[in-house]
Image (cartoon, rainbow, N blue to C red; front, side, top):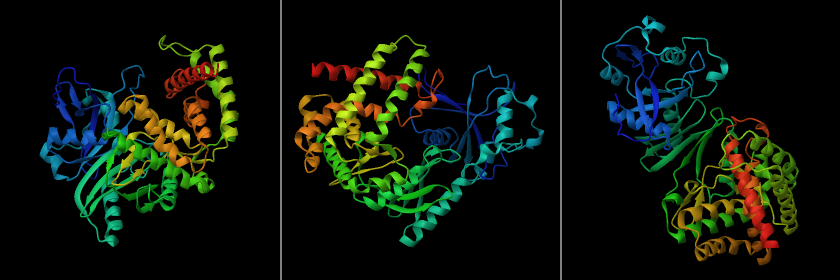
Length: 462
């Protein structure tokens, strides 16, 4: 069904393509039995957008994604194919692709080439008893896209705006979704989040109220979906820009937002932001390094090498000392963005705005700047002059609050402390001795980085 160039890196997804009511499904007849169609998409791109684009390329049909489906093989040994439920926007398009129709009750396990396809069909069509947790999300049912579209239209109407029919779906699951809708006056974004990011709605709302200059404008929210609608920001994301001046503007805007947030930290914490204040970080150091020691013991690969007990202990001691030193500088706690990748920074005509606040935190503001600085180095190189100018754009704003010596020392300590502040927002305390931990590799990598930075601090001090 799909032609892929030799050597092309793609992921294969078995597709359950339904009509909009979920009563008709596309299956393919092969000599070995019925099977589901397969779409191949690049692994590093937005899945929903890629699947919809590939369906349009292959079948000339407009689709929306519903949700991925997990179907393990009954023997629990075979490989684990990926499944995704999709639906066509117009019911007649499914009959155009496959004009022959048969009753789904005529499909049996033996008529399928792979039993997992049969199990996927039964699960998607609700023919089997489904555990309540399998369908709790507000978008797990068919026609969810139509419900979302209708709601968006209702919110736009009082503003004198209407949808123009264009849309781009970037993410789809039973509780997470991200869709861009075109309108007669710019575009809007619909976003809904489930666990573990349910807090993003409350955080987004309070930041939009407090700091409209630096955040997207909210149009409406719907709590039963944990969803909101916002205006698209007119500008370009920082990941598409290599102009140093734009990056410096982003650093300055970040500092201005953080300084403005100093008097609002209690409110932001109450909405669900991570607590990354010194008093919260210091008690986590010993148990965190105990978890890292456990993760090092279960590391399978020989490279990069494991950190031994002595190295971990030295890093733990140096980190504790550094946190105490940072505490004495008495930098006021402020708003942080712990997912401050360049894609979440929008450069506008005269300022920058910041989006995707699921990983908002309150703590030392230089945490976020250290993350942005690392992205700056990756994007524009590590030239000393360019990095110094970038740092100056951020520091100049903070000179109204902190002394120059305090800023300089904080910047020296951040390469060690910032990775730790980020690491403890992950489920590190659920990883003890778990070789299959989802975050094990990332946590070990962060620990190695802290070890290197601790050695550098010790070397410079000597």
